[in-house]
Length: 70
Ligand SMILES: [Zn+2]
Image 1 (spheres, protein in one colour):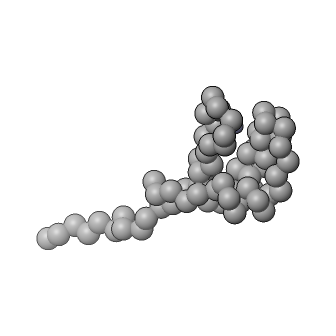
Image 2 (image 1 turned 180 degrees about the vertical axis):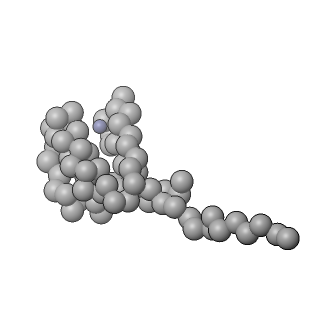
């Protein structure tokens, strides 16, 4: 009798890497998909505090958040 494995579903996580032109910044963060709000918030604070740039949540979400498989 064969045992069936049903771990076929691919899980994805969300990742933000601060790979701006600013050298030396190694900010990288990865969260569960349902934590997107928190991810965007933290990233926005980071960019503002470290790089003095203002991004909207939409900008961060659209341009900097990527989906990665885990
Ligand atoms: Zn940074």
